[in-house]
Amino acid sequence: MFSLKKLSPSITDMIRFDHSHVMVTFHQYTVDKRPSVKKALAETICDALEIHATLEEEIFYPAMRPRAHDRKVMDKSEPEHDEMRSVIAELRGTDPKSPRHDELVFELMRDVVHHVADEETVLLPEAEQTMSKDKLSELGVQMTKRRLELVTPKAGKIAANTALGFSSSTAALVVGVAGALFAARAVTRKSA
Ligand SMILES: [Fe+2]
Ligand SMILES: [Fe+2]
Image (cartoon, rainbow, N blue to C red; front, side, top):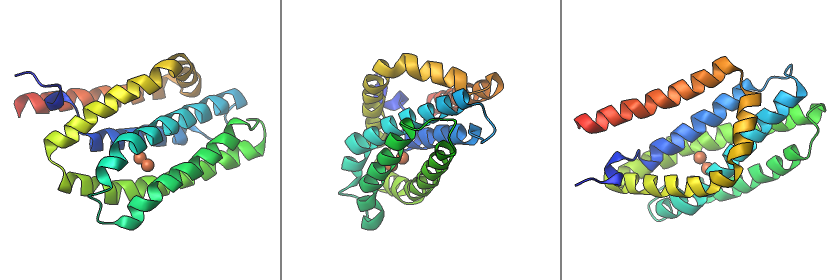
């Protein structure tokens, strides 16, 4: 029987993909870029992080909380999201021509790199050890549905900032990587 669950990537792969996407965007931000491009890149990063944090807090962390062995990493996850939100709020209100804008982007990047490292080396492996593949895919479906609700009202703004922030060659690379990833996954699933 057709099952959406079987076609959906696992929630852990989706989280890894979100992390990669935001890191690619951070890597586009250099001090010599035009202020309008800096602002567009910062907005792309802020929107992506806010949506990702909400998805983890509503879907991944509640599923993980009773299973996590490393309580320290689990317990600091949400407070770290809140710290990121306060940097995001200041960044949004900062003029991209000011050096403070660069400082805040790099502060946010440092926080995100540490947080992502804890998730990718502790929480995601623990999830894959303690949950079945079906459960991970079912959570993936929930995450996709909720993501659509969160992205839809911002879709125009996100598309405009992505177009402005990324050079066309990098945008092609990002879309190409995403397309290749999902195509490869579909083939693997079909032959499994
Ligand atoms: Fe997180
Ligand atoms: Fe994350």
